[in-house]
Amino acid sequence: MHRRTAIIVMVKYPQAGSVKTRLGRQIGMEKAAVLFRGFVRTMLATCRSTGFDTVISCHPDHPVSDYREWLGSGFDFMVQKGLNLGHKMRDAFEQGFARGFDRVILTGSDLPHLPAATLDEAAKSVETCDVVIGPALDGGYYLVAMKQDRFFPEMFDDIPWSTPDVLNITLKKLAEGRRKPFLLTAIRDIDTLEDLTAVSAETGLFFSHRTDEI
Image (cartoon, rainbow, N blue to C red; front, side):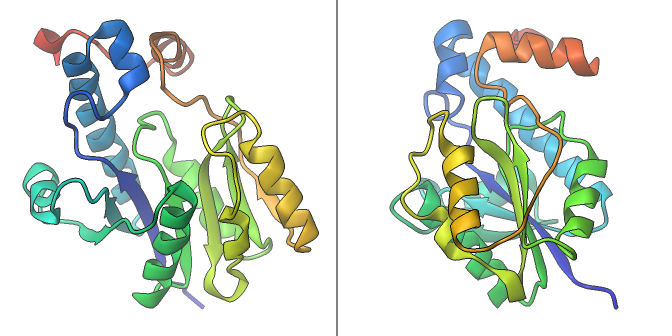
């Protein structure tokens, strides 16, 4: 039986000084914002190539109309709700299931090197596991996927976000809740110039931080 799948991508509006700020402190906030715009477009193209529905979860600092003007009308949009990242992730799943999706894959927006095959693997793996997680090399995770009938919202509670302990604490919560996780291949987040250089070397992708080259 075919199950309807959504890839929900959490996106911030690419305003200089509000996205990729660690990278921006190294190369300039405007250049970092330009890079981020490219990251998002590349990643959304990858998501669409899977054939799954792509939904953009918009940070509420800007109205949905701004995101639609930036990215086009070929996507579904939702607004992020919650006081912290955990609340927003939980709400994204709840909104996705409320829209009739059976499987939800939630990910961030700055992973231009994320292979479409990884998204396909996540969609398949939720059929046999309770939660699919894509570990990040910094101790967090870049993707989480669940089916509606195995949704475990408690995994997002009381997590020290943006620390190296995110994944380990999350896995502990899953074990305590008797949930079976499946871990995808670990991927490096692009937060710094070092990350940018490493991803380019590892994948062969080229990301210029010069605005006159983008």
